[in-house]
Image (tube, rainbow, N blue to C red; front, top):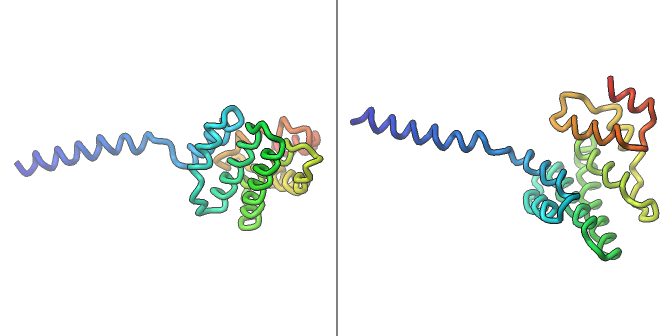
Length: 166
């Protein structure tokens, strides 16, 4: 009888453990919503919800990114500007808190490199580009996405791209 209870409990534990281990990690879900956020405002809103606690600089940066992505989907030029500036405030704060974080620098670079120059928010492009080119390694968990983005960027010289390939 005792062994039967243990085997039932162990079976239930292993059953539920299989669900836990197959669920994406929170950062994977955040990254997925970021990547799809330019396609749909629903993903941008989900990104905002997932990162609303902002307990780390990286979450703060993704929270800021959610505002920038929502700006992309807004029809009002004034609302777009308001949302982008709000998002950049969070991202810049995250960079200040953790300036060596490749992913945070990538998020800021991706916004600034796509923002129209007349907005005046693209003030860190050279700094972030240099940081990314000099510090991105293949061991970074988000390497492929960052690498692919940088390789398509017209802001990188052929020398920069060659350095990234090494």
